Every structure is written in C-alpha cells, then in structure tokens.
Image (cartoon, rainbow, N blue to C red):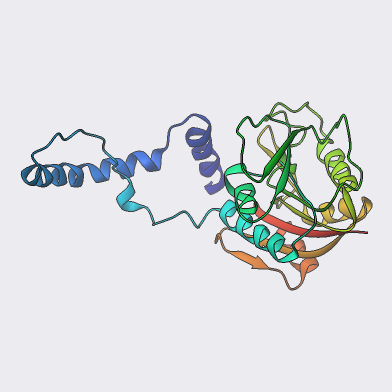
Length: 258
C-alpha cells in the first residue's frame, strides 16, 4: 500500500506537476503569511508587491535527504582523491555530480540528449552508449555513470527501445575504460523488475556478474536505503543478497577494469 501511494504521488508530482505535499504546506502557511504582511505593512511605506512563498517555513535549510545528494558527493570526493588523468561521465546530473567534479577538475560528459550551455570545465559529446557511432576504446582511466544506466532502452530520454540496452551500454562503457581504471556506477537495486518507462531495478548480484563478464571487478560497494543515509558496505556480497529482497535502494558500485 505504501509503495502504491509513493508511485501515485510521484506520478502526480513529478510527471503532472501537482505536488500535494507542497499544496498542504502552502495552505498551512497562509495565515502566517497574511499576519506577517500586515505587520510589515505597518513598518514599511514603500511599494510592496505580493509574491507569496508559503511552504519554505516547513522545509529544512537544505536538501540533504535526497539519494542524489549523497551519491554525487560520495563519488565526487572519490574522484578528487584518486585524481585520474582523464575522467569521463555518462549521463549523470549536470546540476549535481558533474558540477561537483567540474569545480576542481575537467570532466568530459557523454549524453544521449544535447547540452547547449557552455560550462567551464565540462566538455560535452552527444552519444548513444547503447549504439555508439564511434566507440573510444580505452579512452580514459576514470569513468562514472550515476543514476543513468537504469534508463537505457526504455525510451524515456529519446533512446531507442531495447530491452537489453542496459547490457549493451555497460559493455560499451567497459570498453571506454583503460585497464586498471576505475568505474563508478550507481543504479536502483532491489527486486529485479522494469517499471516502464521510468527505470529498471537491478538485482545487485546479477549486475556484478554482468560487470565481471565485461572485465569489471567489484572493488567497493555502498548503498542508500529508506533512511536516506549512505552505508559503506563491509560485506558486499552479504549486503547485496539482502538488498535484492527489498523493493528499492540505491547501489553505488566501484569497479576496476582488469
């Protein structure tokens, strides 16, 4: 029941633009807004326009409970410490992870959709990693793909429909990486399924086996669950076995290319 409610909320809020929680918080803040306006009006005699911001009173000072926040920070710090010669990203958030990395080094971004903005420190190449017209073999010694592989082949971002698109994409990403290079990958994990056309949920152990078949060996594993805190796994196989039974979590894998 809880998962069904979350899915309905996501559809209304993210896809249709109707945020029920924000509406409730805004209505809750309306009396406070009116009282504050009258108080301010008594003290201020200049032009006073109306632009209500009713829900901010009930928000924290920043959004730190989002899995994107933790994964972007976690992987960006890893890249900073590793200081690779050349880092390439596949489809991660420009206004999150890519911006983090671009603040301290150059990053090259491959994405199926165009990016028209010129961003300091970011080199962009439009590419479909399921069917690349040009595959750059052993092009970089550091690679990332955060919250993107799960969309491959579902048509959500203009990519062609391909039920095995994720496997082709992962194989092509492995080809870009030099031997000894590191690959940072995050995807939704849990009971394996496809929620068309939003994303694929991976069985983490199956994903590790697919990566191994492409010459990528697991080096570290971390995950983010319902508590929205990042857990660095001390026993990856055991944790992944338990996580594969959950409805949803976010797995963050660090692979090394053989």
